[in-house]
Length: 212
Image (cartoon, rainbow, N blue to C red; front, side):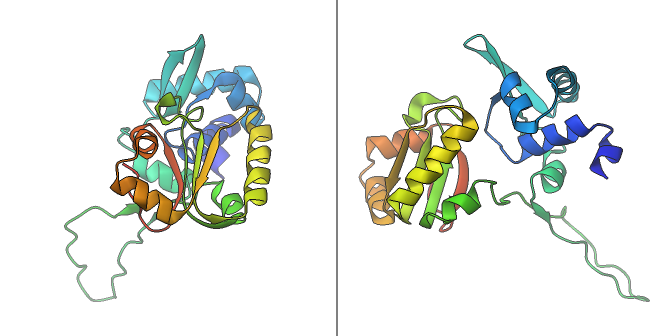
């Protein structure tokens, strides 16, 4: 259905990739591997999305990186379609009754579950998990994955190993307890401050923990 609506299977796959990975940057060959489409088709559709303003591009280390433009005027409805977020339904009007006056736009829940969330939850009780470093091209964090909670270290190691295989890169990760995380926040621990100050993508945040 989406292919008919949006005119291209590659375009639909690209939109799905970008809107499920806000703050994540991808280069062309990485994109072709993830969505399993021909590079010429990917380049053509990337150019289309760039011209519309749905995505942005940035050159770094002789590579051109692309990511979703969260300032795009139609970002919220698109993330509701392609990112798995849920939009609140319109109010039902009973027959014979005038509709209630709507004073604000429908709200969009853009906190849809990240594709990696299920795998992370299988490692134990994860309170917070985020991606940074190589995923967001911001080395201020010093790591690529932060996991906060009570987890099984062996399962985490397996999760990271599988993620490394899918990303085709070695990843730096840190696991800390929730109490340790809160304590480090209180004392303005440099490591935590660097992580939170870097560009990141939150995968899980069950307690609305401070991440900014």
